[in-house]
Length: 183
Image 1 (cartoon, rainbow, N blue to C red):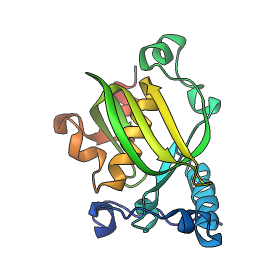
Image 2 (image 1 turned 60 degrees about the vertical axis):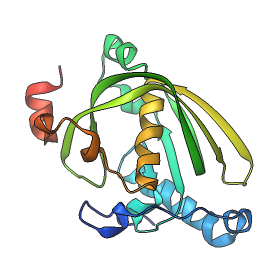
Image 3 (image 1 turned 120 degrees about the vertical axis):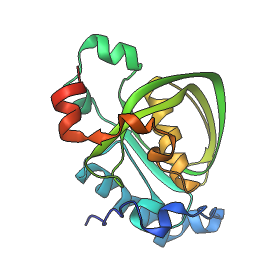
């Protein structure tokens, strides 16, 4: 069963999401929600879904960047983006630290801004301290595209969308991006 992904304009996307206690994380309700989020992300398809995107103002995100998503990129493009597969995982109550202040700009889309993309500057490297779905503390060191995904999903937990960070003049439909800009 997949969940509905809410679109920009829905007030839940602009809220500061609530942290979860260890007891909540381990509850059957939250474990079921995580499974539904995973199914929803894969069905979309996307590389991440944050709880606010499915209408829940909770600090949970699921992430997975599968090899199949990289098939339409050249080796050079993957290298430029520092993009490689990221296995499925869950981040809860994340705290993010920018490790390299230098930013890089790439076109970025969002399942809650369906059909559109824009150039978004993001830090090259980050550290994320969070809990996983078993409420075990985890520290993630990420670079490149994985760092971008983490920043994007964590932004959702703080009421921010990629459109808040993008270079507005680059905002375009996904169709026009593929037609004019992808190369």
